[in-house]
Length: 98
Ligand SMILES: [Zn+2]
Image (cartoon, rainbow, N blue to C red; front, side, top):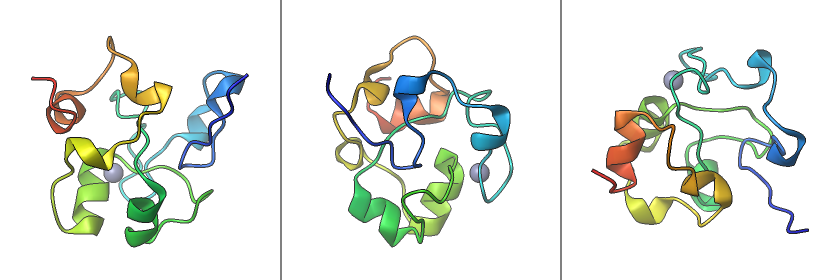
């Protein structure tokens, strides 16, 4: 079985996380509820000042921390980025899907 580590430290192989595990650490929005779960490259996550197991960020808060918009190449090829049915408009735009 392929093992992959989600940048937030949550292992999605165990299914959907509990609500307390998915709130944006900056604005407290539920990232599952707004369909903003994704994986970016580790170096980007570190540049945003996030620890590997430091929680989750919504797209807007991650972009605020980085000081720029995300682009397609910021996202990894992890399966979580390939879910097609549930994505916020913001995330779809950054993934280049619209
Ligand atoms: Zn946020």
